[in-house]
Length: 242
Image (spheres, rainbow, N blue to C red):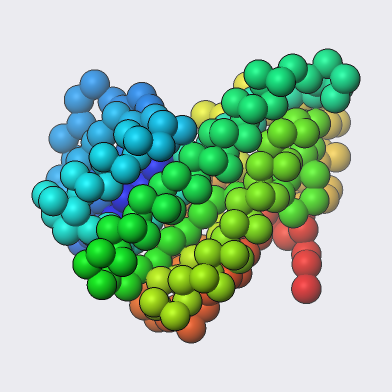
């Protein structure tokens, strides 16, 4: 049983479809689900992941209706306002970006693990971070870089804590992916700006949502059963860390 948050976004939707196509029953979570969704094997639920009580109720519903989610992909998130100098960042903007990207991920991990522990099931969690969490935000969003770095730290900590229960926690850090969250930004790039960005990408192309499917599925698959606490960069070779 799988839960994918941010399932209406390009990355979440691609992962949810890939899981469904491979026979998983998928709960698709988003704060703005489609008005009509008839995909076989996929249930859509409106959920604000920053609302901890609502998240708890949702995972209880999953447990009651289909059994606890033993696969969780935390793909919900968003960068916030780009290129705002730190001295102009408001408390409200800072908190909103951190709450969505970091606290929302924490809420879902906590609720999912509670249900797994109560039923004695094992599981696999994949958190979606960002290259901004491994280096810096190319668009200058301080809160986004901090939150996504926090997601990587949370991943390691949970992997250490939950390992004895055979609940694995890993992370995928995308580079610049063509998605609903980046198209506006990409549209503002000049040809020279785009070329300069691609010069820093070993594969010399922008990423697409489908490029995230295989790394996520690898972590979810029992074949990676001895892998936990890891972060892999899916960025075309922009960041090469040992």
